[in-house]
Image (cartoon, rainbow, N blue to C red; front, top):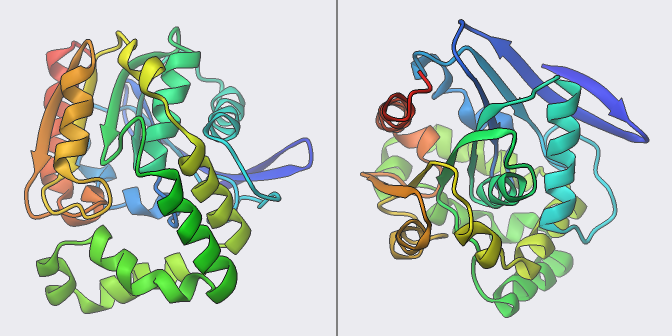
Length: 264
């Protein structure tokens, strides 16, 4: 883990070199930090360097006053990749991290060799749904939605068989800064990346947990079907964050995709 300042903002990131293959950059989901990738990293055989980071208001990165836009969050990612000295890389993201990845690939196509979009879409939910969530959290705090979020993040079997892990990830959500969470909710509320995402030509792997209650498989598959150069894989026995439930399956799918496109 490491920190750097850009202007008045402090960013928290991880930059790990594990081999001689390509660099993979990963963007995490709403209400989490870059630790959600921990189970996946040892399984990514052929990847040489892995860069992860906490988006604004999450983990140990500074919070700023909400609301945010996806473009704001994509610009933060550009600050990260510039600081890391990255010219070209593979880019993956889950949930809002997947939206950030879509926007980044559209704005900086010369940098992104391949895209992995997990449990995401160009547009997630209706604006009214997100505004209702923003209003509820502003009134009652993040703790008030935590149990419902766990039902969307994780499959029923995972919650039953891993109560301590479920409680730990619930803690992470509940302890996220409220401004950071609400700012990102506003970013999702206001985002419709459909035109830019469907114009992408970069090879793209789209994945979704079969039991995802936040971005259902039908929504995520529709994104893959509409894109120019995308394939879809459903992750069995997983909810919204497959890296925590099915890291072996996810790693195999990602490495197979990278191999098929000549990157590893």
